[in-house]
Length: 108
Ligand SMILES: [Zn+2]
Image (cartoon, rainbow, N blue to C red; front, side):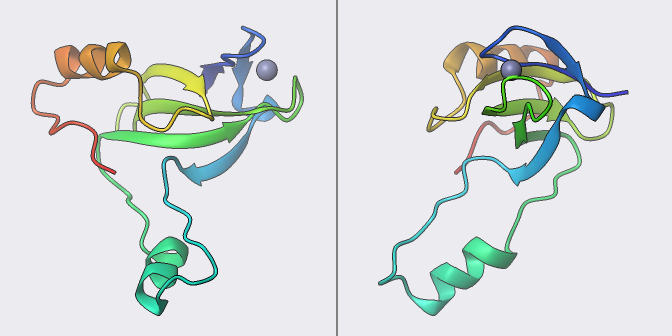
């Protein structure tokens, strides 16, 4: 079972308390965006085998959105952080790199 710590209320919530929101750090383009940018926003999502950054909502708790870094193969959770963060915190990236030396790093 997937258990994520909500960065707002500090509760260890299992997946029945959470709602998935897809990939984190996806760039949203404005109304003047090109068709290619809009297509990429809608359809071109990463689905890596390994380290992945995702959006989750603590739906049966505080109700807030947050980001989580986890391994999609092992379900190991590296950490969670507020959704208003534009890039994963450096401390979290360092932690991931120590555990997964072959990880190429965060790319937007
Ligand atoms: Zn919460």
